Image (tube, rainbow, N blue to C red; front, side, top):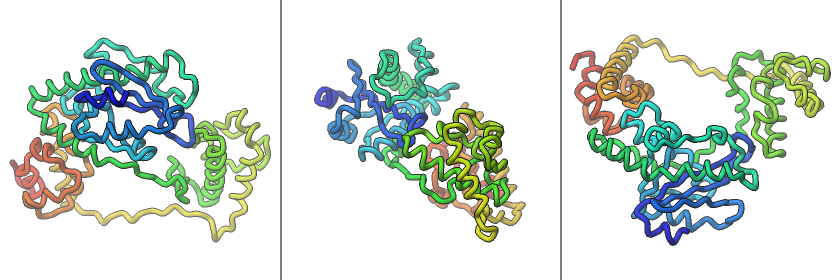
Length: 366
């Protein structure tokens, strides 16, 4: 397959993982298409995938993906594969002003293909794959090269090809980033955790550690062991008996029966933490009020929104708020200084205009 594809000018690529089902996520399926064939590769059966890595690294071969970011990250993580010469149809659709940029929406719009959404969160680690899962996976790449051509033509007519090419070059630099599953304060990032009292936070910490150990040993997604909302509810209720645990709102009866003993031990361990050792939420200091900064930022947002409406793109795509904040923090700017603003693309500067940005920062008008 790789020998055949190596002679093609481009291939389409997609991956399927199972983070919705497994604790340890990995690539469970690779789909590749040329203009004439589609193949699925099972990495559980094909143990040496280096030929595919060589294929992706070939600078003469264009690799077409849809929403490439995660695919490129997990290919880097699992195999150290890094694609060159990438074309992302999702980014192309965004910059072409498509109202819906999901692959299913685009395939239906341009090719009349309806994607079965039942398999978007399917368990791709299962074997054997069903006939329907195989068909779904194949469709993820079968139409991508044709979609790529359709979007490229649209972008060319709009004069935006250079915009997407700038974005595609950045995709070549994507690498896997480990966010720290073993981070000691990861439990505090659960939504609602920062509002807990110190004692409740101590219980949540022990419950979180128990869930991590259990999910890892079962190779099961964390929420399939116990949801975040249930963790919070147990931390607040602090039950010490099976009856009280079963009465906690949001606690599934089957979960309480299966894991009741270790959950209650985790609660007890949190209750036994000495007062002087209770965890505290680290709160960052709020910056001092800066009226001039707020005014600069507001002017930049207004300018960005006007330019976005003029080109028919989402404001956050034309220039994200974080980038505007970085610009607004600089009291005095020159055109050269804009070169040092992180994440500010050349095409974004073209849309908004350097002179307009500087005028907004300095309080003038364009």
